[in-house]
Amino acid sequence: MKRNLAVLWMWLLCVPGLLAQQVAVEEYVLPNGMRLLMVPKKGDPNVAAGWIARVGSVNERQGITGISHLLEHMMFKGTRAIGTADIERDLRLMAEMDAVKAEIGREERAQIERLRLGLISDLAEPGGRSGRHAALLEEFARLEAEAAELIVRNEFDRIYTHAGASGMNAGTGRDYTVYFINVPANKLELWFWMESDRLLNPVFREFYPEREVVQEERRLTVDSTPTGRIEEQFDALFFSSSPYAWPVIGWPSDLGGITREEAEDYFKLHYAANNLSACLVGDFDPAEARRLADRYFGRLRPNPRGRPEVRTREIEQTVEKRMTAYAETFPQVEVRYHSVADGHVDEPALLVMGALLSGRTGRLHKALVLDRKIANSVSAGQNGMKYEGFFSLGGVAKPESSPEEVERALYAEIERLQREPVGERELEKVKNRFAADNLRRMENRLYLMLQLLVADSNRGWESFNEDPRRVAAVTAEDVLRVANRYFRPENRAVALYYTKETEAAADPLLEGLDPQARAEIVQFKGVVARMGSEEARAILEKVRVQEGSAPPEKRAFVAALIRLLEERIAQEGGR
Image (cartoon, rainbow, N blue to C red; front, side):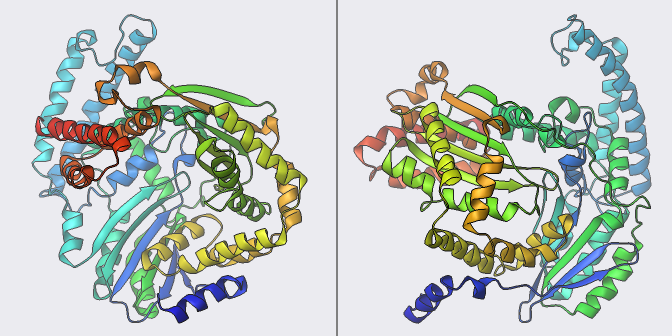
């Protein structure tokens, strides 16, 4: 950075009002209730384009948890026009598969009853199945193989790629599901047609194999990681009544039971036009975009009942909850307090409080990492969701410290905020960081588009412009007030993590490593388990390059890391 620009940047940091810039959004609401947000930016040949459905795991119920994320997968399987060589035969085979699957479901319910009574120990035991069950499974496999011959795989992606588009992806959260891509400005009409077609004419082909794909994703990202299932159980402990208690990816028993009919009903309810918003950021003509929106998205039907809302709220917590866990990880603690939902009047003060505590310049790092030297890392922050919110504090203990010691030190910093108003200079520094972040969040075209969509799916896109001003208005008295209002022992849940020494000692990969290096390798095992062989090879090459220059105290760690990557590559090669 040139010196004059650096000076200008530092000057701007001292004037947060100048950084509270707003993005100019042109909004168009279609007759069917769908919203189109437009941010023209001249001179950019690409357009970041996306749309969002106001549906996530919070909208689910017991029995179909994970269905929002499963639907995200299904939305890439094509339409009546894309993804098949013979749509009529395709649909006929899917109907036959659904009928056979319904019969299999009846057999599976009998299996579940036998499991409940202790007559079998595993639902997957072939010996526990009836002859009819086995025959139905064979018939279903035959239909599935026949249907697979009709599929034109990845056609949706290939059409976009051939047109010069890139980065097609999607994501499911607790409150929303978002789909996005970068498209050349001269291919904008293709985007309108493609996205409206998969909303108007989706075909959930490969539904049952894709359920298994999601189940495998769960095994890799949750079950096979050191703390995945523990973190799920902490969420379930923290939320007593709220649907935020279950994971976005869903519970295993639900993932194996969701039917295509349930998915189609869920889609019709939550992917109606008046529950959707689209956004374009880039070089395009807004008038032309409105015309294309009417032509393509205008075909979508609204839900006459309006947007489905979540009824069940979290009950007031009146006792402290505690959980003790043993895992292949560092000794650590997480303390979570019930706070407020996104947009609540107290949220800006809680966000500022989180910034005061977190980061390399925050109070927790100074007190626990630098001064007392009892933690390797610390964290804090407010997490406001659509219907609920929580404030989380965390710390990873040094080998010679304990999670309880870190926990007590976290409370000491909260108590300090409850007693002493924050100094004006410290408060302004935090606000300046928020202001700088506000400037940066508008620089990237794709990131801006996604933020506008997420904001619109909740309180409206206007909140994107309004929230920086709300944060800038926070006072020291506001921070003192929220610190005393929400941070009470009976309003928190605590998770204490201890290293599972017995299993760690039995792993030859960890022999000769000190406790901290052992914990690092154990955590990295979960990451490596999710890698493909090519990714593992690429990382292995980089590690080997640095192996010779590693300091003596790190050589055993590097050697263990190399062995771990080599084992992953060997596993992939043996399949």
